[in-house]
Length: 490
Length: 143
Image (cartoon, one colour):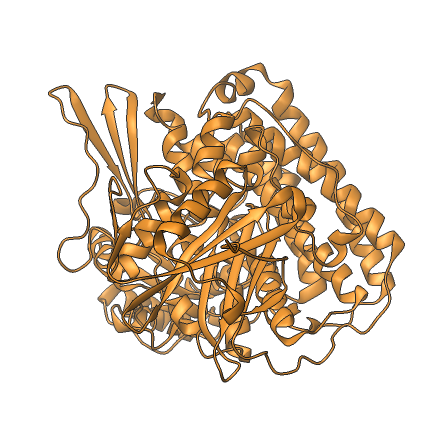
């Protein structure tokens, strides 16, 4: 019996016709067997074909640095994977929302992007019944500078039994707009997938295009990309440590880190002319020539700002009242994190080491990467401490790689894309694994483009973290994850 | 936006920083809209606008709020908040630099540059009488 899998690697293009098309039963079994052996579901998607949908399953074999693909034709229904594979639950809900296909046996096909204000009244929200149970509704407009989303706390007194999350308020149709690309416009669209992860998404997009065009950026471009990606990670982690401090009422660190985040963003501005790095990463390399002296200055400035950050963050760890508000709050254990397919610092805080920089490295990360950070307790404290340790590692990494330097053209021309090919592009953004799955048609243009932001995997983790917590713990739990609304809503 | 609350690191210099973001909608004087106004957010946007007592100002902050920018023409979004509300200030940028926002706010209230004077007085009057100009005030790019 032939294998149902096609093996590929991060950023490598493969012909679509080589992806095995098996029966849906075999497709299911292949995914269940693979995930049973420890492989990880990266994406479950599909595109319309004559007479239904071609389902595509993508798993990552982290230990072997491989990505495996399989596919199956379905008409209008198939037997859902979710009852046996929890990590598929969100993907199957998305599939049922996007296409006229029904995963039979899925416990609850609530649409992922349809809001309560959608035509027809929107989806039914999960509710806990009982005379003493009450509901607290928050959003979509919040009392703070955050994105829109709706939260329903199912409470018994102060205790949260379940947090029901309603997203989709930022749904702006990015995926369909990417179809027909690549164009200069699609590169800009990729940067807006999640504004605070501009660099991460831009690299994922560029890698996909470069893979399909069989182009390789220079080592110099790889260096600038890695530097920008780590600066993005540091700036967001610093900002979030400040926000976590604010949410537990510890104002010194909140104020310092709020300002220091700006210092790190300004370093990205020195590279790109934009505080979030818009316009820096483009297929073929990076858009700007940045000389060695400037890179060294950025690395030095990052180190200086890091020393200030250390003083601000040390206040946090030294305060017993802060630790009391973080320890044991919003715990997601390793088993749960693994079952629902969590990624990024949130997974690493739960003892699950998942990091594309190690497992599926591209660019500079093939040669160098920051030291690993792994915590075990899975609570708000672990997520905050993971962020801090990642800042420490990233600053050291920046210093090292900029010191080593790299030569080459900042940008190389990108040829036409291979027709009828597919590529999976993974980048470890600051929130975790960013996955872009690009497919070209016979004309060498995208005919299907799937984006999986790390938030897509992790939002359900936040819902589980809130179970049996006090409702007042929500802000700090939320900030410890700091998930993207627009990255989820697309 | 949070950057605009402390663009110069006032907090670190331990000087008083201006408070720009009102906490309570019912005490708010302006509505600052960022990002594309999606179809899903339309009702919430209008409801929060109604909740703010007059006189009130509307600011379109960033390219998406101004025109829908890369999403313009998508059925899922409105092409800028100008379709739904009368806008008093347009702050350009993707995203706007905090100084750009601060500069725009200061000019809008007549505390900076050429806005101090006849133009600002006229804007002040039109604000008080509820008659607004749809012409965006001139905004420098900050630095």
